[in-house]
Length: 390
Image (cartoon, rainbow, N blue to C red):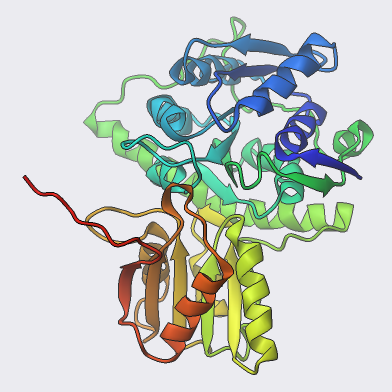
C-alpha cells in the first residue's frame, strides 16, 4: 500500500491491465492520468502497447474505435467538454459493440466556464448505451479498472465502460491505495479475445448503414446487451471481492436501511461525507439510512426497490440537473419506485464544484424529517442573487 494521488492510482491500474492502445488528449482535471501513462510508456513499462497523443478528444475516441474494432484492448480518459466532444464517437462505439474502457473525471459543463466538479458531463451520456459506474474513493477507482475490462470484454456485453470519478475531489487527492501487482491482474484478467474483429483474413463491416427495415433490431440488441451486463457485473463484482477481500458490494451499497424511516441516495465522493452524517444521526436515535448508488447504467431498479421497501422518505442528492425537469438520479429512482407510495425529495447540491459542508447535509435531512420541505426538486446551498432578464 502506498499513498498516491488519484491520477496515479488509475494509471497504475490501467498499466497492469496490459492495454494495446492508449489514445488521449489533455483536459483538466484528468490530464495527469494520461501524463502518468505517457511516462510509463516512455519508460518501457507498457509492453505491447501504443500510446497516441491525439489532436482532440473526438480524435482520441476515433482512434480507439478503430483499434478496438481490430481486437485491441483500449483506454482513454477525459471529462466535461472533452466528453461531450467524444460523445458522437462513443455513441458509435456502443452501437458497434466495442469494449472501450474510459475514465471520466467528472467536471461541470460550460457555459459559464468551470473546471470544477459536478456530474453534469457523465449524466449527459446516460442514454448512449455506455455502462456507467461511480466511485467513492481512489481505491475503488483503482479496483474498478480491471473489473471494467472483464465486464466490457465479456461476450455477453461488449460495450464501452465509463468509470466516473469526481474531479479534484479524487483525482488530485492523496490517499493510501493498495496497488495491484502485475501478477495479480494477470491472474484476474485474461487477454482480450474478441468475438469479431476487423481482419484481412475474414473481412467484416462494423457500424455499416442500416435502413429502416433493420435499424431497430440493432437498437434492441444494444438494449439486450446492457441488460445482460447487470448479471455479468454482479458476478465480476463478487469475484473481485473474493479475489482481493475488498467488497465494494454490487450495483448499490445499502447501509442501515432495514429500520430506516428516511434514506439518502448518493453517488460519487460525497458518499463518505453523507455516511458520516448518517452514522452521527443514528447515534442520536434518528432512523436514517444510506444508499450508495454505484451503477447508473444499467440502472439498478430492482435493488433500489428492495433496499427501500421499508423506507417512507427518500432524499436524492444530485450533482446534475436535467433542465426543464429535475435531477437525473431522482427521475430514475421515481421510475424504480413507481406505485410504491414513497415521499421523494431531490436536492441539487455542489454544482460547479461548490463546497458542500456537513451542516448542509444535516439541514437537508432534518428539514425533510420534520416536514419543512415539500416533495419534489430543490436547489440547495444557493446564494441570494438577482436574475437580470432583458
